[in-house]
Image (cartoon, rainbow, N blue to C red; front, side):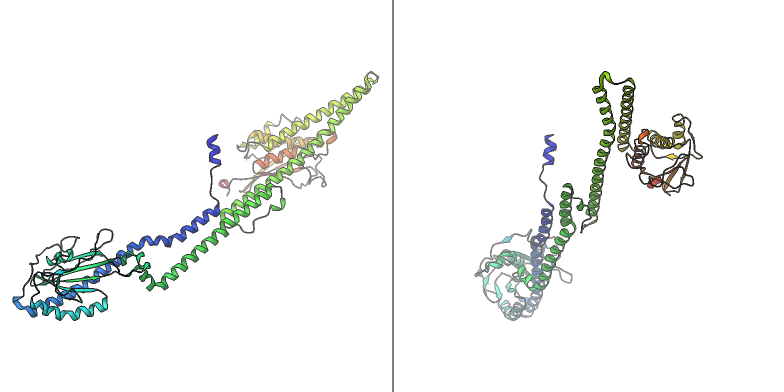
Length: 538
């Protein structure tokens, strides 16, 4: 019991809160895209490295050619580049073997590559550069400057000892102690991510990690399969906010689309779900307060499910109102019908009590007879009420044969001939079927009939049964009232006016209907119709 109460009292969010949550999630979707900025930032770093690889490879090729021209065969070199040397962290690649393809792929990745400290400053060189290298550096200097103006990358040309021989600054100083340069001097391509320290940083740029790192690339210069120097390049990846600014028009329309989609979703929720449910709640409260004018469809149903819920609720409310009216009318009729015999019994009993021994035997017998008749009428009325209550709460289902039911009623009504040319299967239990036909036959006998003719037929969708008698019939003025409870033309002879009401209630419970239909003879003719289940139609 405690668990059930706890479950029933459990807090449940209102629909408006659910809608607000959904809209909030929609607004958070573009914000969640910030989590993907790292992927985009990583792509910018890979793009930067790929561009530096291409530019450095071109400069290295030009520098190698210049060194061959200026140094000749006496040009000093570094170590020999071996076939199969490991050029990247992604596996061994034959990088520098002549007359072969030697692709170098970007290897920097924010998720795997550590960010090294700021590049160490240059140190004095142990040996001065060879004159041929200085001459080649002067020739390449113009190429480096023009390339830097276009690409915004920094380029330095180093000899085989790591001494700077070309570049805007640090000429004559050594960078051989830098990790990526050291690898390149051994004949392997190398790259690194290093911290970028800005002297006058702008707050907005700190949002993107792309402005706090710098990509460094060291590309060996190979002459006659030997390392003759290094092209040392660096560049800061493009800032994400800068990229978004450059594509601000597309970003603007994306924001507009997200806001518009959020508004549309909110409008649809409010129009199709939240609004109709609130209206349905107000309508149900009004109906609960007994306002019959609330039994009208909603102005806006929203969607199909709410429409079905609204229609079912209104239909249920109509039935409850009808049931309430039925119970009220029924109670008034029962009170009226029982009041008459009870009043008569009370009056006769009071006369017997007041008259005492002075009352004649004839009058005493008369009053006692009245009491017995009225008691019998009240008892009969109560039995009919019990039958009506059973008909309203009867168990639906079952099947029986029409012929078997009519045959069982033959002994119940001696003197009445019952015949049926054809048999049929009725969609109700035999006990309920006997109550239906028993009341119809009893009603016909009370109106002077001694023959009952029952015919059955089917049109595929319905089973229809005609019950004809040869009694007095029903007048045109009473034909509209015969199924009303407590209506009877035989009140003085004990009629209760409930027989046909019981029949109609039983048939209604079994998807059946009964009606008084015109007949060529003055006698009564009732038609019973049963709607077949969808699986049996056709």
